[in-house]
Length: 195
Image 1 (cartoon, rainbow, N blue to C red):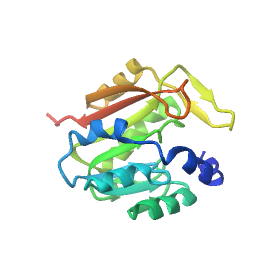
Image 2: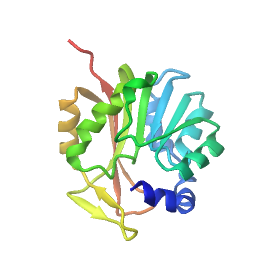
Image 3: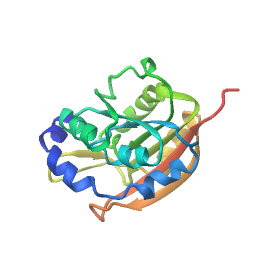
Image 4: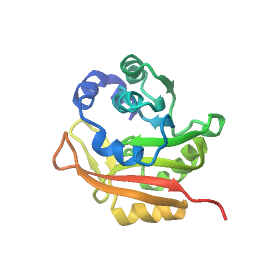
């Protein structure tokens, strides 16, 4: 799926960059201390990291598409790691106060989600926070441009988070600003203390 975003980076940027991210980022920032460190997985052209940076957070982007990563650097002035989060070793990174994944896990098959969440959480400080948004529905959907999206029910995701010892601090359902038939499930999660 990375090739799609690299080949269509300008259109993707034009479609998504001017959407106000406050409705889906504020539920996370309500829990974060000032100047918290945040890793944005699949940061696209830098919309969310720019919004967070302007509010005093220390933000690092992570993006597979070199073209989008270049735009993100220009738009935000933040460090952007170019790599694939499905294969990257997150245990080698500094620890962050929070991870955000706004729509970047939508192309994973359902059985991949737990292993990827376990992998990316290696970059979190103990009891760190996560913000995750995924599309609501059943099965999967294919866009006219050929992209495949995995769809989720709230009950399915809550079982996944419970299994991973992630507490749900905030939940939202938001209609997409781009396609009114798409509904996004948003979760602010926190790692539970080990007993």
